[in-house]
Length: 446
Image (cartoon, rainbow, N blue to C red; front, side, top):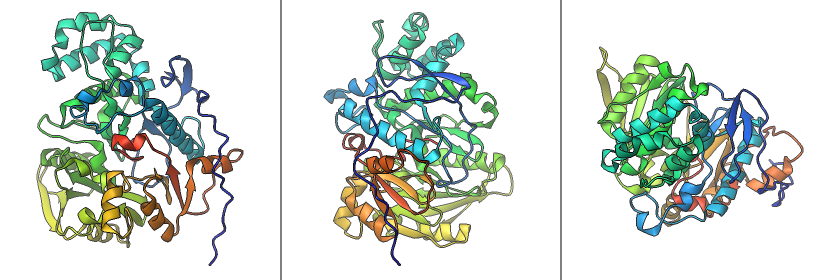
């Protein structure tokens, strides 16, 4: 059967140097991508996620800023980066990605900037003081307590700059936090609960402090505190390791960033407080190339996943099925032969696994390294990924996806709303973003 082709062009009417507009009112935010901070208005929806591929309503992102420019070669390893990004190009690539999300969702407030949430939170004096005290406790080696009073006297804008880029008028040294680009790792929304991450590495501890201050003090999160899951100190967890398959099933990667203590604590909390009945723990090699489950496995639609075959299809008996035990605090477990078997048996439907990098093992390894299996689905059957992973896009095309560029997509829908009538795979340029070792799912927290 012939597939109707849309005349997507490779040009776009999007002007990347113009400020982004958002016009739904409820809470004042501030645009922090440019050097001029101007007030904008944005409404924030209540957290609720029961599927990786349900139509997106709102997503938290962080457009690269001064913290990215503060990364130096001698700090790369400690900051968990492989290279220095050209922040201007990374910003433009990120803004283009966000414009795609806004067009698909159809709301100007579809995208929420983490930096905006933080600056709005810091307008509250109590929040600023709580941040300084919590940071001093979380990172005692930095001796922030010696400058606590001075830090508390900084303006909201000055403390905001210190929190993200580590820069202030005070003689206080703080490393930048460029990994805040990957907002997926800050927390995970499962049903109507928010699981706050516990970073496994010192480089990401400050991010955890910031997200806790936002959730505690920002007016958008009023009422969420009783639906927030905090993990014990020994438990490590980052949001890239958790995928929501349904309102009954979640997958969690047992990775270098998420330990078993974190997985068991999350499972117990979800069983007790949400509709989740099954947690699938997927064992991964404890190495940077697959630091989270979503670096080797993501959902494209209700029956389709993009996977890295060596760790998802070739490995056997690497899935542990966790269910509630006979009494609180007790988990039952059993091993399952594969991720595909586990999903098909629990969700009662067949799944197609599309190989990242196509069928060639060499291409699979290359494209997994550049996040070919880390796609994000803002709508069922609509995926966003890096265009450099051409073999992955070719595999998606063979499975019925129409492949288009982000600019072409926006140009075609420049004067119309998006109405999905086919499966789409949207290519982001990502020349600089991909060098940060995180794909579109890593950069988005629904």
